Figure 1: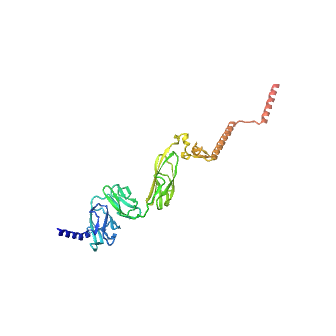
Figure 2: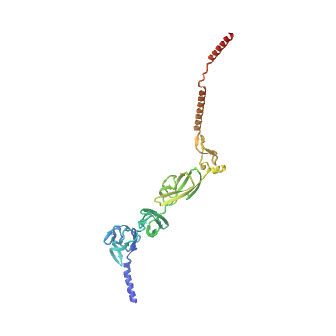
Figure 3: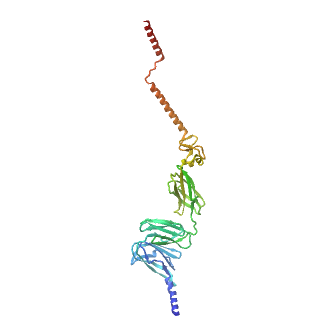
Length: 404
């Protein structure tokens, strides 16, 4: 019994180095259009290059999209599998490795099968080596699908339309060992190895001076405010773009750069009509730094306020403005906190008002003169000499008649 045990022990010593010299975590079966992701480990004396990788089906060489890279002490290979169901062989040509005290150079072959229902979705690439934020392409092979992504402190749910692909940007995290980005649907899960080179890189970060703002405005009053966009990280942030959930004036719409510890001023101007919530976003350099501010606007009517309440607000808050010395108010004039003559209407020039008065006066004068001429038209006025001559002649006739 003891002799048999010793024999078995020595056989295991001889066999185990051969078994574990090269290993691969290849599944026996994959779905059509699935992304094959595998780790190849061993005592390799030379790197496995892309020209060493071949795929066969029987004797036929199969063309596939694939990449291979060395990450730490192992090799990671990913490939987009074909849509056709069949048996396949992965061949590593001229693999050079050390096994059981021997230097070996030979082909390595690994078999697997593609069968079943087409995979829910395909991803690319199947591994990441990066010192900065990266993107991964998700492609739905059926109808619209929701995919859940998890990586260190990053989580997201992405909707991908059927037959379309979508690029998702993911912030790199600093970690020494290989971490995994998990992407899963209801029927399929990928674990994408991530080798981070970002240990010495400080995250970029920007933020508005406040995360939200509650604003009460009188109807018809504009909202004008200045916000500070702060770089509170340790790197300069470039190519910052601003956007809003509602049409408004953002000045400037783009900021070339903000240095660490500094800020940029953003002017916002809009005229809300009703109660609403507005979200303003700032993002930079492929979303490696981003922030938002939410503005909650509440509208009230000036007519609902008493005279005393109105006097507690400034003229601009009530949607008005004081007219200049050479202007008159063309609307309602009220007393406010900062002025006794707040015009809630259009300010008009006094000179233009005087001109209007003169024009009206001229029109009235011309009308009176015209009326007088019309009334006296057709009447004859005799000169005084003719009038006296006529009277004397009439007297002479009357005298001659009386003598007779």
